[in-house]
Length: 493
Image 1 (cartoon, rainbow, N blue to C red):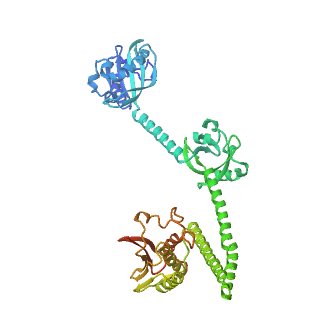
Image 2: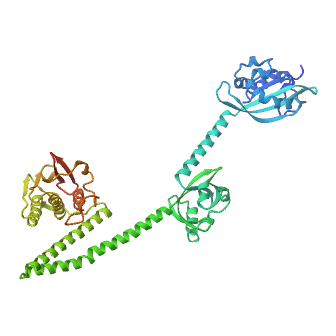
Image 3: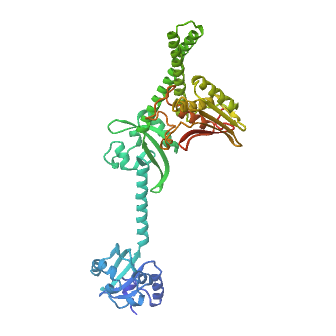
């Protein structure tokens, strides 16, 4: 039996023959090749197909036999038409990518197709078609490209610029970096050494970081194309790229942060200078005034107008001293996040009684009532709690009539001690409770004895002891309520 022309495979000479007993082995080879294979006659009817091609076409192998290819696999027949014409003319058509509607749908099949003419005795007998399914590979490449695009987008959002380099030579860069360095496109950076954009005084440190593979953030001054110097923060990691390990560097423009740090440093220096002036330079003349007025008051023998004038001067000096204390405490609270307190054993009723007595002397016509129940001992900063109580009493006295009684109540419990200060004549609208303790609150007149920081500092004192200060309104009257744990949790020992 003559050798079938279709048993000539690509790369096998046309004169090669296979004995009939070898045909089963060749058929097994064609089915095991991993390719879909079809043998077509000159009219492009299927003479034989293997299982792989039948599976790709979605048809049983026997359905193909004797039928035109355009009927058995119409999804690819139209695309293959020109390639088949070339093969029928005697050309070996190498592997060509072809896309077609998937069988079964939806989606696309991505195939790589080859055709070779089959001859017998020099006469064209038909074509050998082989098909390789690349759908999963194409889809995976597409997924990889999408992931790469996604990661690049994330990198663009996460930093101001990024690039890949191998021992300093730029391999890839994003548009953000190019723009930051004053270049029109990333291509202008590729192939250059990163040191070109580093300020001279930073080059040794940068090259050392590159050589040692530093993976912690560091700062560097870079040079734009126009010569402008810009501070950047750099963070680099090793990543795989094109089969090798290279460095991925992310950069952040920190000009804004540097400017803010410089402003904060200047502000801090100004604050320190201001506090120094307030705490030292103002205290000295103030103490001189207080000593002088005190001496004049002790001398006696002055005419009534002079004595009244000296009294006003002494009161003004005490008021100025209170302002200085409030300003210093306010600044400390803002700078350090709270007031420092030093705890020592104290009786809350005793220190509150002293504060009330001082206020009674200043307001001899005002009725005061102090009630104390339970254990009111604790470890507190007595001076700070006296400041708290004085601020609450001062607020109540300032905003109530002179004849209105002021009531101070202390109550000891298992967990701590509560202190309340109120007057039936004190009324604070509920809508103002939230802003009552704000410093320099607009619309609230400053205290005649200070800067209007009393309630703000009172709450700071309570919080520094681990307690709280609140305002409550009931039946039209308002009261201030303080709760203190028995041991100041934030105290210095």
